[in-house]
Amino acid sequence: MALFKKEPTQEDQLQQNLRAWLSQQAGKTIALANLNAFFYQNDFFKLHYFAESGFQADNKQPVLTATVTKDAQKKLSRIKETKLSSELKINKKEKSLLDGIITSDQNYFRLYVTPSPFATGLLLLEKLPATKVFQADKKTGSFVQNNIKELLYLCYRFDLAKNPQLAVKNLALAQLATPSLTLPILTTLTAIANQTITDLDLEYLFTWVLQYSATITATSTLFSAYASAALPEEVLEKTQAIVTELAENFARSSTVLTQNANQDSLAISEQLLKQIPDLFQAANQKMTALNDKLLNSDTDQTE
Image (cartoon, rainbow, N blue to C red; front, side, top):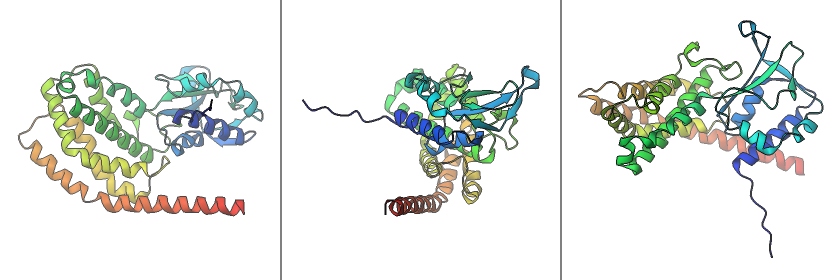
């Protein structure tokens, strides 16, 4: 009887890559931002890893650099896959399993992991199918839910790019130097989850998402072409108006009904869409060039 090897899932691959990456850093001092960057490079934006030193809550200070222990590989082997898998799915702040592997000589050093605003939004979004508006047309509801997920993603990516220390300091969205575009999305999703939004307003929200879906998808796809917290300055500059408009209108659409709303949103969407193709083409060209560079590098090493 033939035995077939089970293909690793995306989560399995992420775990393997994380263990390998930490083993490679053994004995080195690292910027903790690089730990978060590792996950971004693996297209994973659901966690914030951050560290603090200090015993009492009022005197805790963020720690931005730490050391990976020399016996990191040995310590990692003691962490069961199921345990690490649970950490990658956490829904509240916890002391990380990697604390003790990633260390510091600062007093009362602790490494924490907490869900990112993107992950928090996804959790809230799970409540959408329970609403009457979703149940009335499940096919449309699923489409809207997926588009809101993409909107949440692109707003979080924009916040990350504008606020480089958002994750490593676990900054509150309301206190960012650059106003958060994720926050209004989370506020509306919280209202949906708590059932404090009327059916009429939710119907209007669905209509708005349907009208803006092409813009949302195009912008989200553009951002996903860059596997890092940073986005090129030209992309940020040319999409800032787009993303700001999307975030503000999403939040406003569930609370303010106007006679001209449909016409305005369609006009704005058409205008914004004209700016996307060139940016997306540039992103694809850069990704292709990077892949070619990596491929050539591998070929050179083989030879």
